[in-house]
Length: 401
Image (cartoon, rainbow, N blue to C red; front, side):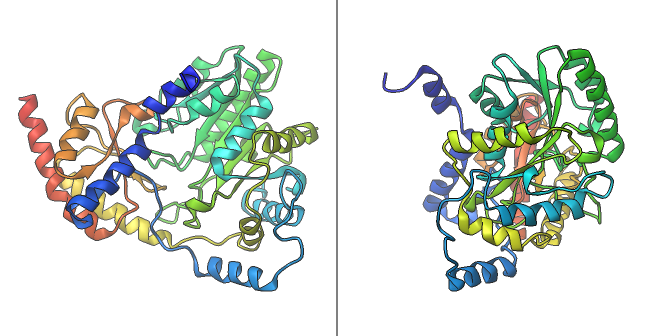
């Protein structure tokens, strides 16, 4: 065998959504892109803000000395200061301390941030509790560093169920991982839910004799609808680390730019910062791309036109509900997570595929009986897909009868 057994298994069964995305591209080439309704992957299609292009061009024209050179493992200090100032404005009003460059590590997207966090805090056998449904690659990220994901049941309509999380915490628990706005449901956790989770983790840390971290995966923080504000997670608990990327809020997923941020109210956080920066180096990321770091530092507070996603959500939700689908209305992000009309969500996704509709089974998010749809597509694609959703539902009902 040319590969390790572990990687052979991952290559065979992993990256399912990416494979569906690639199959969708082939299908579009065969029958025409306008006849394929690909809701499989959260690949933002909303144009990046004009300020991004303008900033990148200006930085290149300035030809700054050293702009393409090596930098500290944590990223450019001036960029980390700019990000820290943005975090203080956004999440620091209820904190005693202010974010500084020593609380921020620039990373290769949120995936890079989560991997350096797990590398920094996990020992072999440690557990990370996360509510269902959850992004499937959390499993691999934790396993990369000797840990294990432990799923907890969600509350009604996928709300954060603090008691359910508490039932999963053991002496081996090292962290609780949450994602809000949530992929795949679009739920935004409330300040009250976060405060309750923080109180639970204070008790768990005292009981376990070591800190239980709260890790917040927040790449969709700025994609909230109806004037909602996503509550700040740092005030809920001192031992909080945020992982994020700008793939979604700046529509630059291919640029792989994000960061990990430590709560400034966490006492004695210097060793944690140093561990994160060291993990950045030894995992091979070394640092996030220099040009995107420099641009990002100047774009704090800039985001895409969220109204475009909200309009798509309303069109999609209205069409599916009118067709008879059962789903929770997303409060943020850009996904729907309807119930499958038959128990086997994989079988129903195959019925959708017969209509050239590409969706993802809920079981890939640890939540069978549902399916995920990403509305990073045009309104025309959504509208034209609705008859196919109706036909697939009719087929499913006929099979169940």
